[in-house]
Image 1 (cartoon, helix red, strand yellow):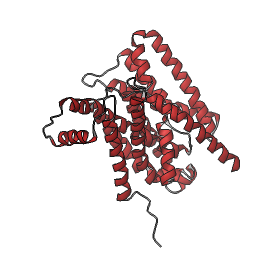
Image 2 (cartoon, helix red, strand yellow):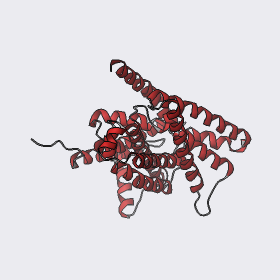
Image 3 (cartoon, helix red, strand yellow):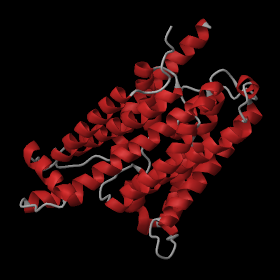
Image 4 (cartoon, helix red, strand yellow):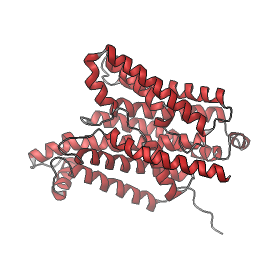
Length: 346
């Protein structure tokens, strides 16, 4: 009898990559000024191979505005989705995500402090915001899990979500206090806090790619351990998992990915909640498949959300965080209802 494959085969990876690239081309073509598919492909092909580009105005729109933005959107979606899948597996909590646990709020506070008070490092213009976002995101996660453990040693879904909501409200009040004293930064902080990747450049895309390669790879290498966590920490320890080390590694990686995304695109909620659940329906709970599928699924989901944000009320552009929050709020209620219904029948 053949053993069932645990990982993705080449065919599945190619299929996901093709869908992702197709979505990316669609998002690059469509906007306030829509461009023909043939012209778009020609410009991208010539730019990739260093060939002469004759479509001057169209090429400028594609290569300096849309392409870097779409790349940043795709990489942010992939990073947030992988983070959400890892947190749900680690905590065995279907509602776990950077936005629902308060990690995004903590990262936002760090970034807002950096923006409001000009925290920077010489030669590294984004390092101040990024490091503050990562640090505050990690600290927030530690505080939330510690408080939840003190209140409920079993770390139940309801307790973690309740503490996360309270913590997010507390962080929101601090951000409002900062905005009050830094009124000259109100516009930039408010727009950034709603989530937007408008104005992203290739440097941002490289930063996101680097973070995803480093921290996403670490999370992917821990897929076996995440599968073990699905049957409980004690059982994971019994099969040889170093629970303390793995939890710390995963928490650091998730905080770093969320922090980098928040520092570049602002607070974009619910991507890590919605996408892993959608993907889990297709590939199942095995993290060897789920993490890779979530990476592609998150990129596709956020690119489509960004496309809606750009064209729905054209020429007015919605913040992408507004679109994902509208979708995520409905998904949150459905997931919460299903999990409570499952508990009632257990």
